[in-house]
Length: 94
Image 1 (cartoon, rainbow, N blue to C red):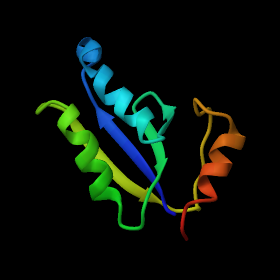
Image 2 (cartoon, one colour):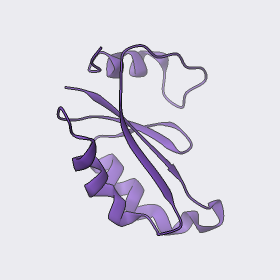
Image 3 (cartoon, rainbow, N blue to C red):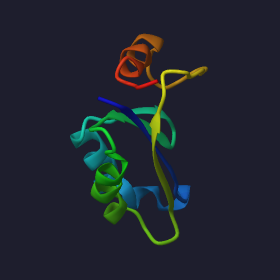
């Protein structure tokens, strides 16, 4: 199953309005890896499914990206351990 990156831009001053978004991300099994980036394992061609689950919880002024990631990745100082990210990358294609 592929691995997806969920990335968003929201206003920090409005952060209190996003508890439902964060709860939904956790409910679908997403892991927070940076302050505005999460990863989640999903179905092949599942970006639209993930997007449709979380987009209604954002506001018109927000930006949202859901993208499949490949195994070819580099990172530094994620909010999860390297082991957690390595295990997630095992789901990635490519």
